[in-house]
Each structure stands twice: as C-alpha cells, then as structure tokens.
Image: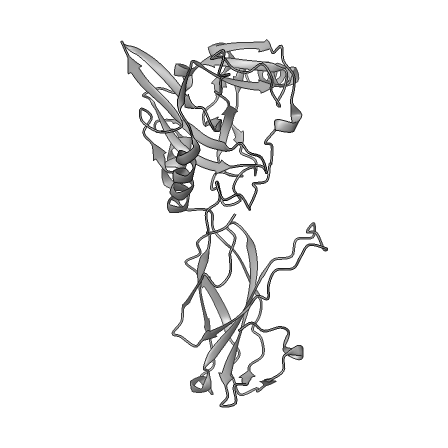
Amino acid sequence: MFLGNKSQDSGIAEMEELPVPHNIKISNITCDSFKISWEMDAKSKDRITHYFIDLNKKENKNSNKFKHKDVPTKLVAKAVPLPMTVRGHWFLSPRTEYTVAVQTASKQVDGDYVVSEWSEIIEFCTADYSKVHLTQLLEKAEVIAGRMLKFSVFYRNQHKEYFDYIREHHGNAMQPSIKDNSGSHGSPISGKLEGIFFSCSTEFNTGKPPQDSPYGRYRFEVAAEKLFNPNTNLYFGDFYCMYTAYHYVILVIAPVGSPGDDFCKQRLPQLNSKDNKFLTCTEEDGMLVYHHAQDVILEVIYTDPVDLSLGTVAEITGHQLMSLSTANAKKDPSCKTCNISVGR
C-alpha cells in the first residue's frame, strides 16, 4: 500500500498520542539497501502497528522538471524491531543522495490508520557497487567479449597542446588524473581512481591500431610490455554502453604495491593477467605476447605516471571522430546486456 500526502489521504487521522520518531540513524548502507533506526518516547509505543517511511531522491537543481515522476515513495511497513533493513522496496540507485522521513502508525479495526507527525528529514547517500556487483557485471561482459586478437602497443590520443604541456610542465611524464563519471553510475572508480586512459584495440585486417580517434590527432604509442607485465596487476572496472550496439569494458592496470594497486585491491575484482576474456599477457618462447578481446572496446586505465620517452608521439593520418568519445558518457539504463538488477 502506498500513500500520498497526509492531507489527501482518506482514512488517515492524526493522533498526537503516537510518538514521533526522532534521532534517526541510517547505517549499513550499500548500493541498494540500508538499515534505519530511530528513538521514540515510551508513551503509546505499544499501540504502534506500522511505520510509514517516505524516501525520495534529493532534488537536483538541474533536474528536468518535466521528467516523469517516480512512483509514490511512501512505504507501509509492519512495526518490527529496529534497526529495520530496507531492501527491495524501491529500486534504489547506487551513489545517489536520498531524503528519508518516518512516522508511526496504528492500524484500526476498520482498516484506517492513526498516525504521528512526520519525523525530521534525514539525508544520506547510497554506496558504490561492491565487488559482488562488479563480478556480476564482469560475468555479463565475458559473455560478449568474443575471440582474442594479438596486439603489441597501447596508445593514447590527445591534442598537440596536451603533449606540449606535458613536456613543458610535467618533465615529460603524463600524470594520472581523476576518472570522469562515464560508465555505470555505481562504478567505484568514477570520480575516485587516478589514472591515464589508454586503448589497445586493433583493426581486424591490419592487426594495428585504427587511424581514427575521437580524442585528438596526436597519438602516443608505447610497447605493451612497458605497461602490462608480471610486475603489474589487472582489474575489472566497468561494463557499459551508450545507447549503441557496441559495448565498452574498463580495465585497470596497476604496478604491484602502488597506491593505485591498493585502491583497486579493495574495490575491484582482480583478473588473472594470463587467463581472462579481455586482456592477456602470456609468455611464448621467452617473449611476452599480448591479446585483447575483439567484440568489446577496451578502455585501459594505467594508474602511474608514464614518461613520453617510453614511446613515440606522432600525428595520425585518419579522422578525429568526436561522436565516439566516451567522456562523461551516460550508460544506457535499459540495456539488458550490460545492466544488473541492483541499479544503474
């Protein structure tokens, strides 16, 4: 049973004797659940049969005022011992700010409710995806990764001014920066992990990187073994699409024991560098050999600075395809291929 505003609800009357919840506490927050508890005066406490919980997404000043409103957000719950776990009553979204208020209620013999005043409004934010949720995404990505193709270089496209700035102000070393908010809304790396984006996709017919890029006409190329080797760890970061038929997988390469490695070890599923569906480093005849998945676009984040002297910078001969950029790209929440049920 969902309820609208008190003033509009038939069959609901106010009765001051019922205690008003106060000192509300939110705990055990995950990306799709939380526990809620509060204090109440002892008077009439034994008459409480239900709790009404009003949960709303915190208003965003930039939100679309004409967007379809969510379903009613008031939950009628039987009075259970506190703290009470709230899970599955709403489709809670990860990393989202909510407001919550509570009132106590007593169900009458005729089915009507007597209710207290609403409590104060409390704000809280849901958590990022856990390793469990990311493993669900990982398993979905494995299904469509396709066969593995050999490659030999990682590359990064930027404008000429970017590389000039790196040489002049950073001693020739590209510096990690905070990852943007592209991809899954619940991804624990968005807005938190520092790294440098690289690509490794190759053209099927040439085995070499494509000559087009959405990120700039100048390309830094570096031998794969300089970034991905037995001294690095590999992690799965995200799986998403942008209302398109093709999908992106974000992987993280972190030097063993580095701050980036410590960050990922706590939050991301670690992959076997020699045996996984996306990016592998194996040894053949004393040489390191590299393969990448054919049917997903890999975005590889390297978590340490990278000196330009490790590779080469040259202008590409193709086009700059801005439409393919994933900068701050929003994930398609309706895609059955790359979404899991806990949120978007």
